[in-house]
Length: 151
Image (cartoon, rainbow, N blue to C red; front, side):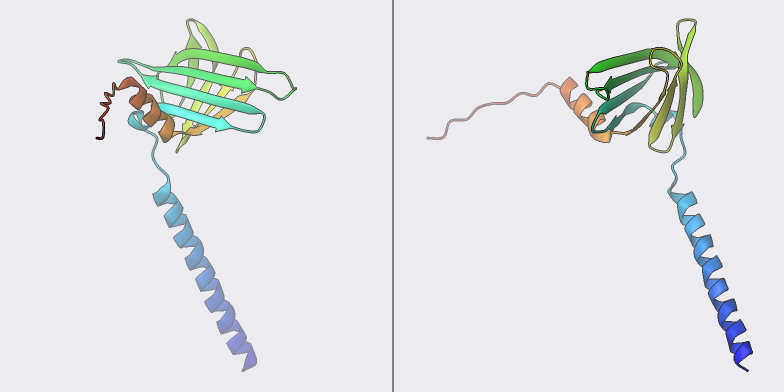
């Protein structure tokens, strides 16, 4: 009799475990955002204690423009590297500067990875910085401030 209750308990726990795994998988699949042309444009940053990566993506009529700036302070001396080019396809494509392939860009939900083939060969990652997009759009607006005098 004790064996039967033990088996039922194991079955019940296995059922809840499988149910929990299925629910988690469902939530994860719903929360991942599909990468589209509309949501890759913007600024992606990654600031660490010894380096800063800023990747800017803009869209033109037939392609995307790409700019990656990596500021390095790892060896105690400041060095900055810049890659600029264009690419056409998402979620992944080669970045071209003229006829030269300078790297490969790959998008995932909220982030971009750039593998550089020139200058400092490495992989750089940036995360979507919606505040940078907002600051950039605000700096392009003109703001008029009037001063009032209180008497």
